Image (cartoon, rainbow, N blue to C red):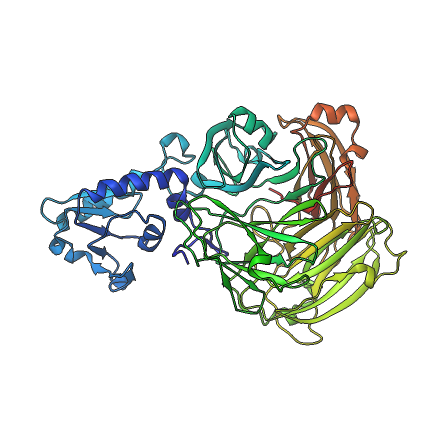
Length: 634
């Protein structure tokens, strides 16, 4: 496993990790390594305890003669086989060069000058800084806004193309002159193209289309990853987007998928990967997020709860992509079994592809938390918090679509899932309750709602909510996740999405719930992004008004149609009943003329200051294809 710290739920992302792993920093690290190799012996002064991450992400560094620290508590700490020594012993090190492991080395170099060996010179990580023009906050290098970065699965190959869509939401926090620094990697990890694009000055929409990029740079077919760096960001250092995969041209394979952003922090494990059915192939796309090769045996697949991982026996080159057919590694495993991906912090949230009947669909796995333990207070939350944690999901119109629910363990300590399913019609009326039991970690439950609902129930759809129910015992931690799979009864096309639970719409708070996009809880407002259709595909969203406890009887939801400059073209309002939902198609609520003015990079902003809505979005095409994933807000 890579010895890096990437994300802590309490403190957020580790900026140092991003500063060391940025593609330009990785290039500069190789140059620094060559410089150091000519100036051995080398001592490393590590005032901030970053040596493990530095060694993990810079394997080309020449051998270090010794590591020296200033913190007395760090003396003896071992890194790369070297025990840390006190700074006071540095003069006797015999080093010709002292590498200061810091991006703010000026004052540090002056402070340790009396301890340098005779004739030694100092180098530092200032040598691998990004160019000044790429810094959002020039005066503070390790500011999180300097590293607003992410990856995207990106393909234009085998009749399939991809289109990344988002908006300049940073402008809403005062950002000006926002631009993207982009690098496209091929499957073998080589850089196909590097370029910049300016974003609209306001909250306009933007799109990155693989077809356009391939033509612009005269590229061959590719299936790799796109690195995004937002320069000039404000408010958010998280790069959020929707990614559509669709046929490259008319007559290509009838496939359609959408996925959420990649969650830019590599994790030790990921979960929510389904085993294939007998007539399916499930491909896990492993895309190396670093300039360091993933060594053979460093990643593995395992049946959830089995703890018998099967290792991948090949190296994966820096920034390269590898397609793992899970049937090759776990040949006897079939749906509804679940698979755990032991990723060793080498990759950001991966995508998986399900191939069945001439169609392909793409979805994502989720971060499996290693920092959680069961919360003993959850079985006895006060009545003011009502049903507590809820995991809402849409039930699409049942005459046309089947809906399947599969709870997914998403923390390494989860050994039980005590769950109930509450069902609601669009007006918020109760449509059924189903106790799922106290499920074990290795359960194989995938509940088809057709087995618990009469054929004439919820003909126009509605929504469901997974909630904790401790009547049969069990423990919980609040990190409740599930996979939701939908099948078109006419076309045979399928889509799936996965997400986690929150406490919704209560005035009372519990820890960091109800979550807010900005500020402290309670999160009682909504700002969701809905991209428009393109290329003959229709956009839609299922908006859900979940409530852990009784809240406002109806939402006061505004839908604002924006063009690619951020200007509002048209507006309308919607009232959703508490515990109700609404299935919305922009082309049914906005005129064709207004949608044409908004353009293919326009979007709908769903805004509500009275309650927190949760939503899923997707596209529908003329061939019976559809996509679905959870929405993002900002």
